[in-house]
Amino acid sequence: MASGLYEIKKGKNGKYSFNLKAKNTETILSSQQYSTKTGCKRGIATVQANSGSKDGYERKEAKNGKHYFVLKAKNHQIIGKSQMYASAGGLTNGIKSVMANGKTTTIKDGTI
Image (cartoon, rainbow, N blue to C red; front, side, top):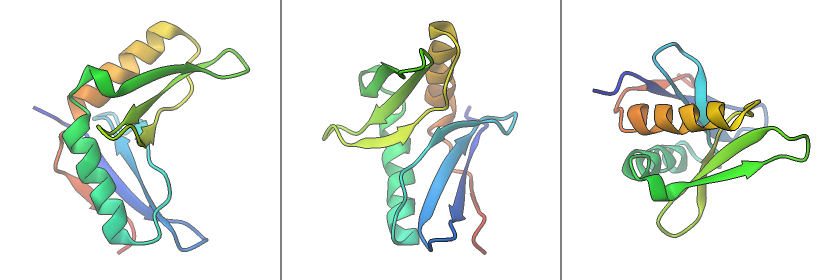
């Protein structure tokens, strides 16, 4: 059973984004910015639908040697990005956490 939650926020530029947080409240996946809250909620639904498939995760390495991943929808569009990890093992654990928590239906709307 998933125990994480999605948190919607609105930036100073008026755009919406969300973070997927694990049970310990650590952010494990962050979205792009959306011009509407409805678009942001659609992004959450896309993560919910795609987070359980190993095929959607693309492992990457930043120029500074840190590791991160992106989650892609079936149309290959990026729907979320992880934090930076010092090791490939940390990255693997991050993917496992998104897979475990991504289907949660708990949404905290920080814009209200």
